[in-house]
Length: 212
Image (cartoon, rainbow, N blue to C red; front, side, top):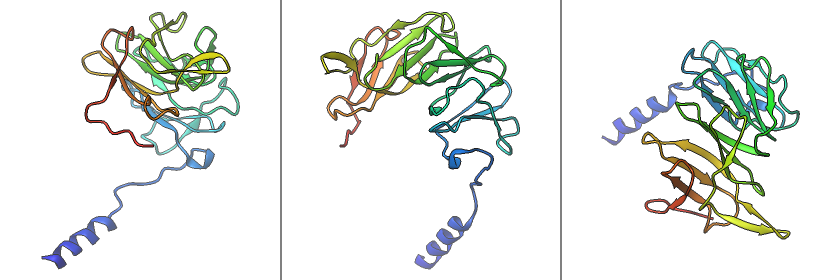
């Protein structure tokens, strides 16, 4: 039996289930991936100024789509709105209405945006990095923003109060919001949930383990 198990295990690991794809710069270090469900186009973001990339053939080839994105900034997330507009958080939030051909900055968006989630009705939620302003919501395509961070962890630095860095935001099937805080203090980092469109957040502790 042991010999058969070893044979099956050896056969399993000898198979190539995954294939590495080429064509993305920054030493192929990909920070994020997303797909446009309307056409199957793939989008990838890379760190440290590597830029954003697009594939129209399931990842066989990639084209850089960084015109208008800030130089030397990481692309940590790319999101596709229901109307097909692309959004990319960076020093501010950037949008592209032509599939990544050109990007323009949303000047009223929060600074140091780190992550984004877009609801089926087009409502956008962005999180910001460390020493910044928590989570914000826009109901008008990014023209105006409302801070929605009550209940998220804060701290004081140099006499000023800041929210801890937001790592990711997710919209659950029931419409509630989830965001992960991963920034320094082990007693405050973790997963938070809002059931009122971001007006209030509560930390989820049941079943989760926080390590330092």
